[in-house]
Length: 191
Image 1 (cartoon, rainbow, N blue to C red):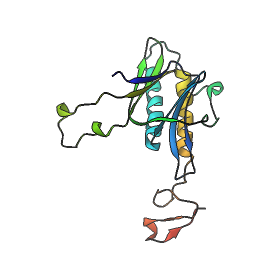
Image 2: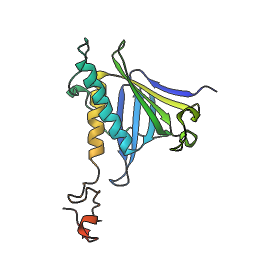
Image 3: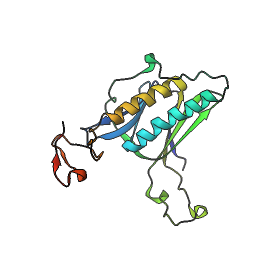
Image 4: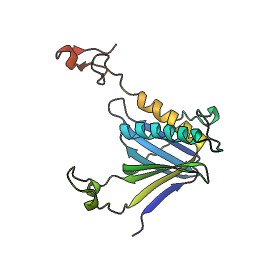
């Protein structure tokens, strides 16, 4: 059976956003074109890595010397500060993601595959024995460079908007404080 492909080339809107309070947030990628919308849940770390890698990819394309229309920063007119669109209906939880540059169309291509327990390999399993199961769904977004920069900027801000880190141990501090290992088990209060 062929996988269901949620494809946006290009989307009218592609953002990372959250639902919930800091410390209990659920992260989503959301794309919209017309009335069609797809939301995929993922981990905070995946959002952070995706945003960083998009910027690195675009910087690399800029530095190749090839003629391109890649902006060095996110264009102000493409910045999106609006919340996730409602209703949020999770298509799947993200597992593997791929990122590439299509030089013909000058687009960043983001592919998100669903998390699949069968795709998890044991650390001692030889690579040639690993069989990737065919995904049931796939989320593909092709972004012009300016929109990709805007996505990255917003995604980094969304990740940073969580709980403040403890200045001593770096762990997240809840509003009621946290047990800091650097304070020998005493509770530190947030400032």
